Amino acid sequence: MNTTQPPLTRILTPTGMLGYGYPEQDFWDCVGQGVDAIVVDSGSTDPGPYLLALGSTLVSDSSYLRDLRPLLQAVHRHGIPLFIGSAGGAGTRDQVDHLMALVSRIAAEEDITLRVATVYADIDPAIAVQRLAEGRISPNVRGELPTPADIDATAHLVGQMGAAPFTDLIEGDEPFDVVIAGRAYDPAPHAAWAMSRGVQPGIAWHAGKILECGGACAEPKGGGVLATYWPDAFELTPMSPGQRCTPLSVAAHTLYEKARPDLLPGPDGVLDVTGCTYVAVSERTVRVTGSVHRDQPPTVKLEGAAVTGHRAAFIGGVRDPLLIGQLDHLLELVHKYTAGLHPQLADGTARLDFHVYGRDAVMGHLEPARQLPHEVGILGTATAPTPELAKAVATTARVAVLHAPYPGQLATAGNLALPLNPMDNPIGPVSAFTVYHVMDATGLKDLFPVTRKTAGPA
Image 1 (tube, rainbow, N blue to C red):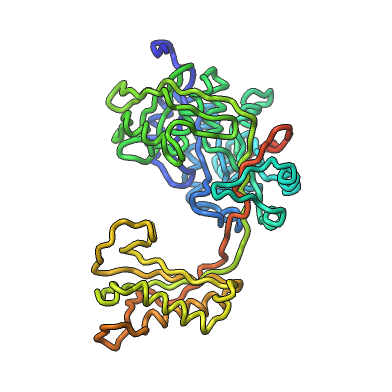
Image 2 (cartoon, rainbow, N blue to C red; image 1 turned 45 degrees about the horizontal axis):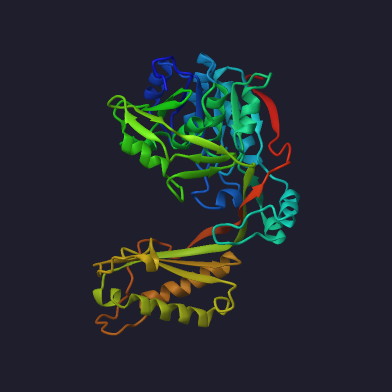
């Protein structure tokens, strides 16, 4: 390690998610200090399967336009390439094209011309079915394999691309200003850019793992972060002056969303952080060394989702300690009563669930704290094949919770304080992951096709 030598490259990630916002003046101040590439994530499965099943975007167009405009201005004024991963939320073809349209709109309004490469991540279901038949799809964390029917039922099927599609663009002969990619492993574009500049793979992947969440590795968390790279080290500095990176904050974020603290698997291999060191080199900057990447046969994480029904919900509060103390028994009686009026609950066609907030809504039966709260919120959700049935089940359950008798009850009024009117509300289609599995990608070519486009004045 020789950080007295000039760094190989600098990557700025101004926000952990495109559309979540960032301090614009801090962004321009950081760009003015020297940035070689801007990389920003635009998607996640954290919100659940609806982005895939319904084709929804993670944020509104107004939020995308607000965040994109300064980024594209920086691309044009300073010649800094911009990489966007997992466009739109789920990274489907339609979401990539939608983000491309927004880039084109801004380019036209700014009277600039941008060369854009779009990389698509949609997977042909026939490929997945074939790989499944060959035993080249691994069981998920519950030990389950998808069925051909699961794969065929997907509204959209995407695969997480690794570094290769980005590396091919970076090292190719055709220039670009912006890359809009479909579903991508979050650190992949960061790692591809760094490795193309001579950074060791372990360092490149580790930095990307932290960078993709922007300033979540800082104190206080949020905003953006700048990574400075040498061949065998990287340094992280928050984009905004009111934040700092510490060895603890950076090391802690390395563990984010991982099942174990030492080995972090990805599509191109495993990142081994066992021997890492985290050292504060200033009040706001941390240097990381010792990261190692161990190559393995290529894999692609498949993500597919489908609409499985419709949902309606009601919410209300309970402040009677007599009722709170026997709430589980009452909700069991409500479920039984509702099933008597709606046989679809008994045969599994419909479903009724309760979440008791203020007690154990987050962890359920795993919740260790068992003291009696002074009030709770009850969220009731009904899921059924049609919106009409979902609302009917929700209404029956809500009325039952509101008026059901219980031992020790003193009043004859309702049990539930209902803050919303209407009281029972349709939520819309319900989605579920039908495919969430890792596929062996050995021998597969052209999984992630590239299209070249121009954005700007007609």
